[in-house]
Amino acid sequence: MNKKINTILFVAGATVFNIFVTVLSFAVLLIVYAKLIAGRLPEENLVWGFPVIFIIAVVSSFFAYRSALKLLLKKIEMEKYFSPVFGKK
Image (cartoon, rainbow, N blue to C red; front, side, top):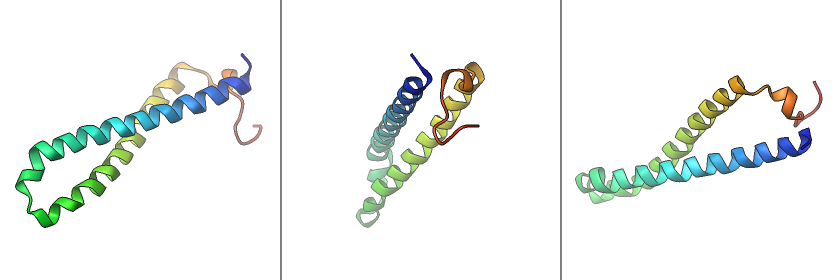
């Protein structure tokens, strides 16, 4: 495979990974919220759980993506296998 195809596959895989981590963390946080926290809050405050869980899930997926990317950068020389996305160096 050439560098362009590697780049496209990497971006597609990274996007799928980021969406998967977001959905997984959202589901886990929603279950924890429903089991542990929702019974202890007044009914007026229950509506705030969903947006807060969504924001936490997005932020946690961002940090998971950054960590995975740092590990990948240590193992793979990016310039050797991938072409630049926004121009040449």
